[in-house]
Length: 265
Length: 269
Image (tube, rainbow over all chains, first blue to last red; front, side, top):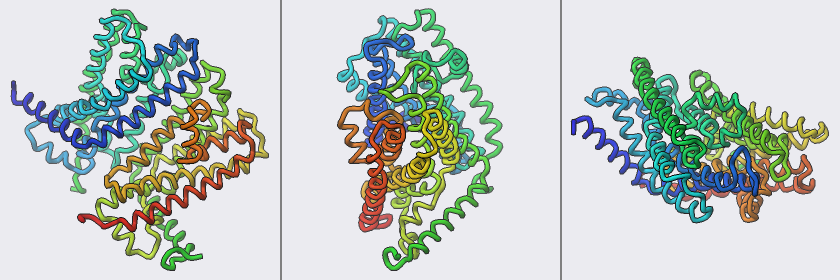
């Protein structure tokens, strides 16, 4: 194991433990995520009834909503504020003196914080499974590929969040940036409403962005709305976005870091 | 009229507005933040609009509610949240002020603490929320065929929605006097669940949820009850509940805040 990997692992573990220390986060994440999931379930049950809407029946919509809950718990529950605060409060000046790559270190911390959402996600899924009995994956392979899609969500979520926190080099607060990102993610991922409900042009806009891979890709694979080849194509696109956002983050950081002015200095 | 310890209400109001305008002066010093926050509020509302447009392209109604009526629900909720952020966003800082001992300064000044805290910040996303929320409300109003005769009810509903929303947020933020923490998690929980549930007709939820939203945490009076009355989904006498909810939520906020101040023991104790 190289030194860098040891550092990465240490940062993942520290971030994971730091988040787990605050048990109220579990309850809070479960209350918000679980509450939103229940509201979505009630709405779709009311709208779909025993029929179908844009190819979704009540069975598939239950699975879709639970997958959306897991994705939202993982992405919205991670520690993006820690990254933003380092830029806003000037700690980044100390980070820049360390023999550690800034982006890679933040990625390790972010992934550690995403892992800490597991207890919330697991509790929510078990409760939802008992309450709503959603259908299983279309096939064992579809189930496996859904897990791959969730795994790729880690670097993808980091890339998106890292890019948005870099905006803090030009602003004094992070709140608005976070809301903007979460609003776009909620809508274009299909979390708010499945992309299949949208007109063709809006679906094209959504698929030109990285957001659909947070809900639509795993649910499409899980429910068998795409065949194996289609699923592999979606996973390839998800991986490509993860790599592309990493590279974009690296480029933006090189420009942004020249703006560092800590406490007016 | 005088407030506690002989502070005249007029003086308290003057303190509020002076602090509020000081925040405005501070905001314009940071244009990047202003635009990012205003855009966040605007984009969020545009996406709510898009959500309803997409939904109603697929379904004719939701529990008997049409597209324009649902737009009014979302619009009024956004305006209420925007009013809270525009005029009373400082309430969200209660937890952080308690932890840092910042309430100390407010206690020594000759103005009500709640006024000083409430006016200590302006959420700039409110610009987008209020403008686009109002646009949704007006568009829905016209589309639903509600005439000009009901406009006074609409104006009253907007004012009351802003007050109820701010008061409920204040009451829940004041919980941080006892449960210490930077984040006002209970208020945040309210906002999140209210934002998801109350843009839907209350009738789709189980009776327990309806009772809670109407009488326990009266979020239904922020948007659902007034919109139901003007669109004919509820009889007009329900409107009497709106000022009652204003009174109840304001008394609750003031009461919880006062109790919180009594329990406050500054930082480090």
